[in-house]
Amino acid sequence: VEAATSDASFGAINAGGNDITFTIDDEGALVVAGAITNGGAILITDADTASFQAITATSLTSIDTTTSQVYNGAINVSGAVDLNSTGTIELGSTTTTTSGGAVTLTNGGVLTISGAVDAAGAFTQDGAGTNSIGASITAPSITFATAITQTNNVVYTTDVEAATSDASFGAINAGGNNVTFTIDDEGALVVAGAITNGNNLVITSCDTANFAGAVTLAGSFTNTLGATSFTGNAAAIT
Image (cartoon, rainbow, N blue to C red; front, side, top):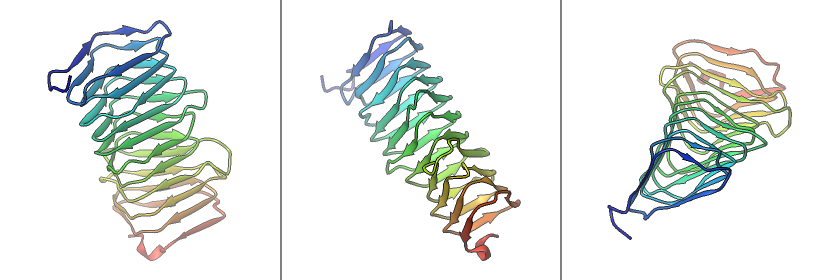
């Protein structure tokens, strides 16, 4: 039913190893107030808002929410996490995937990451919305399509020895915090926009590093790697 009252509310769900699909009217609110445990494939096809606590499953997919998706508890998935929202997405706790599981986040509004992300597959943010990042991200590769504002010190790590272990960013407003890049020594680090309002900037490893925009720091710039090339306008680091 297309109505603001077309809501669905649940407590804890033990899926018994089975799949769960939530199809809520796009004016309705989906609330799961307890943990989802022992899940197979968890799928949200539609809702206006969706709110979850901890989730343990083989995969987690959302096709769309109009206004928001909020994950307050830890996400532990043995496969992929693929979240899509016309509105905002909020990861309030840790997100962990295994068995090569990628993390793909397509956000129309702001993406907020408050807990550490440890992905066994590629981490990709490919929505039009901006990003509020307050915890470290580790994955075989990292891609951000839009600008980042940090709310804490953040370490961006690619942890697979491969030529594909790259990390790509747009602009980063560090919010007065430290920015650390630990990229596999076969990987390329690209920051296509400016880094502003930074404290300390640290590059611990990578194959190549390219900073296309200006870098503004209150603290220091430390490059501890043996990169085969380091490009960027050194005069723009202030």
